Length: 338
Image 1 (cartoon, rainbow, N blue to C red):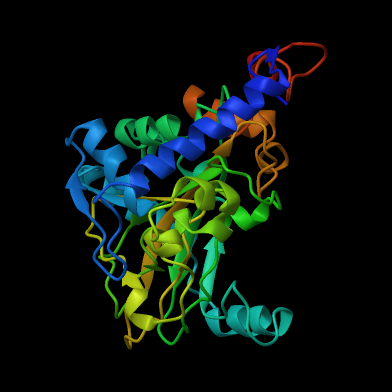
Image 2 (cartoon, rainbow, N blue to C red):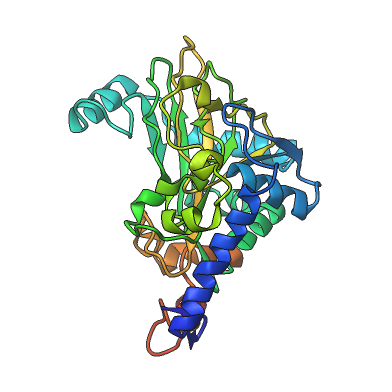
């Protein structure tokens, strides 16, 4: 394993693992712990980075309000509606149900599309590279990698009648037991106000710090928390519905959450309101993403993307080595060649 171009010694790997454990143990040993069943903190995008990061580390989620201008939101809605063709939706949902019989985490009355980045690269690029969002993502992940990738950008619709999604962790994509470092950050950009009735995402605050999430070695906690409280400060997994928080978020906001937070889409109980959003998912630069972005966006398409987006979708190398073309050649060269 290496961070950047310099391989880490075994001692440095152990020290890095200990450092992240200390980060979260220090947090858990304070009175500033997540309120299970409480509300998701909404703070203005202009709030200090330190305050944003404090909430994110504590709860595993934060809602940044007024992050996007009305013009950007309106323009995104127009692109979204042009992409999400409403013709023959009954056939689409019937086909989706037939291909996913029974319970499915993908849902039956939920529609996802990946083309929105290519449809409006400059506009969508503004959403997924919003400065405070990227500051939060980079601050959370680049301690453990030299680059961050965005491995998924989706337009998402949850239609009336859709049932609640099972709670899950996005980081389960990567079967690394006891990983003890952050692996990814997910974001949601509401294009309709997120409410309980329209199927707003549900989360369990602080669940990224539960022992089964992988951040913290149970033995480390037993050794270090000898005050008799044991796991109580980590709020062990529960099925109590009162532990679940509905992520209500207004237009213009961005919701970011750690990939180890338990979450799931809610049930859309309305008769005629479709919950619309843009989903972005970021990960450490040395992980394989959920979507193969280079096949999705080959050079002839990716050349039209903003440079920061090009790097985020993988036209970049991790530490100058991982993901290169030839030997040490940055893949951005593919986009510069004509």
